[in-house]
Amino acid sequence: MSLMNIISKIKASELGVKLLSSTLWSLLGGVLARGLAFISFIIVARILGKESLGQLAIIQSTAIMISSFAAFGLAITASKHIAEFRTVDPFRAGKILKLSMMVSTVSGLIFSALLFFNSQWLASNVLAAPEISQLLQLSSLMLFFLALDGAQSGALVGFEVFKLTAKLNLYKGLVTFIALVVGVYIDGVRGATVGLVIGSFVGWLQNNIAVKKQIKKFKIPMVSFSECKSEIVMLWKFSLPSAISGVLIAPTVWLCSTMLVNEPNGYQELGLYDVSNRLYQMMVFVGVAIGAPLLPMLANEKTASNKKLKKFNIIVTWMAGLIPLYPLIVFPEIIQWIFGEKYSGSEMLKVTTLMLVASCVVLYKQGLARALAANNLMWWGTLSNLFWAITMIGAASYLVSYGAIGLALTVLISYALNTIVVIPLYVSKNLVPRSTLISYESMVIWSLTLIPIYMIWNDYSILIKAAYLAISISVICYCFYRLYFNDKDIYVPE
Image (cartoon, rainbow, N blue to C red; front, side, top):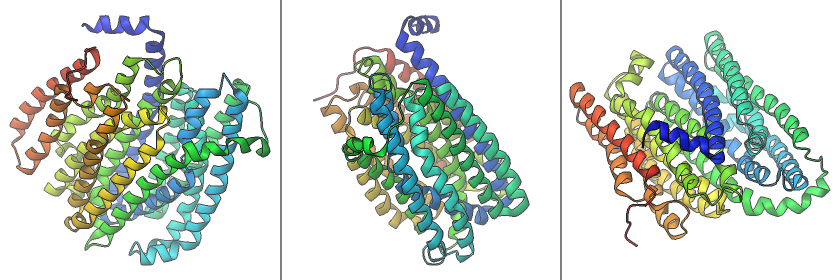
């Protein structure tokens, strides 16, 4: 099938046009915002060096970890239910939005206060760095704004205003970029922390204004707290499992980072790891941006049964992450060159490759997670994340003694095992097309994704890696083409 035929098919489909437009706007906003954030991080890393960068990483990680408790899974709750009810039942959409906002405000205040008043104990007894206690107190403001913004961001996704969201992400990215670079230049780690607080405040403020405009546009009524009580059961059925899933992720990552900083030269190793981790985070965020339009469509009864949409849901973030990342997976020297001499050496190359491969696994899993959310199977997602958390902590307890490489290997192992374990659930419940789970094409893609790890460990020459890249990227693109356009799934044994 030619490219022109593909474009013609998309244009002939109302769903295809809507999906393509929404995805492109969401992708544009995510790429621009995260691109700016990554450039600012390069500047910050070059100025600070590994140890100070490690301190900034643990400060930010701590605030994000605690904000995952405060967020209470309200982003995905608001996203799904506003998409479902904004036109058919505006009153119920208003109740869910109001309840989400109230819960996020109260929980944000509580958890911000907990971080502020316990920062000295945390810095001295857990993080082995009493000198960062005041910076942890400062980061409690970032935590508060992140908690408030969770429900708002989810609401904007539910309203499907992806062009507006792209612009808002760009504005926030520009402000954060300037605040971070100026802050770190003037006052090092403290200045960078202030920059992060400013960025989180701007994100909350602009999204708050945007949500209010959408409420007026869709004529969603303002409701009282007493009218919201009937939706509290929704918190149990949907928000609670989503919250537990979210709570499992950030604290687990933070705990593993804490294990690393308590090792010899721990903050230097964390700084080295954080370089690759930022690229990993950027790609995962871009995957979220690409997939954001899909959850409302999968939840909408008019489009939920579309087989092509289900297949696109799995493939799009997987492909959009793997193909741009693949040259970096094969040639991690590019990242080493970008960050400079302070981050050079074989350890950096290995950490980078491991984290980039791990990001490909996570991007694939995002499609599976959307399928669970659209089918109201959030508790299954919670169990999956619980298994991941146990695996991650268990692996880290053995591997962090190997420094940044050990932590990167922990991330890859835990996500890979978690993905393999949950495949029978998706097959048995027919949640996604089988060929995206188990097929010759998918096995070829995963094999070619993992081979560069072996090549980096055995120091293959640049010429061999260049030849491998040219051949394997072509094969990967062909396999993705086959997965999407082949209407008959490859036979999978029952």
